[in-house]
Length: 168
Image (cartoon, rainbow, N blue to C red):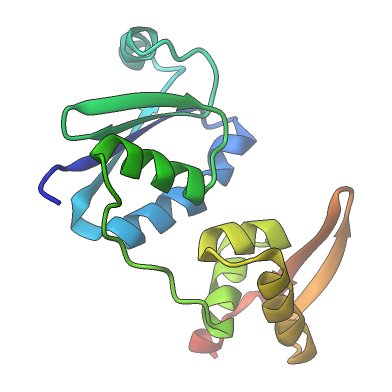
């Protein structure tokens, strides 16, 4: 693919959904490599308000996805599969990308980096089913590397001791 892919996230530092988009953008950077450029527009900054208005962005997060000359704005939190699907749609055909490595140690590093993660987050970032994500999380619990923490909406997982195996 010769066209550059660009994702502009319209964000606000107080928006928790915006923070939640970071793993999705990181996944996109890993998947598309040098084909992808990611930029951020802070909606609350005076110098960025004009760009928000230009694209009709009034809530956060929102994403301007551009492939070559074609572009579209999507509003609200989006998982990688939705962003990747839009990139393919704008490109006119599937765009080559790397799939993330799904190994227990990589999952542990992801959970440790963000402090905690839910099954759905692991499944979305690693492009696996919720069942496969649960199996990996259960193996990490059995190995004593993760703990399960009850949450209002289900379960969260966090690394025991806050250190990945690479740091031990």
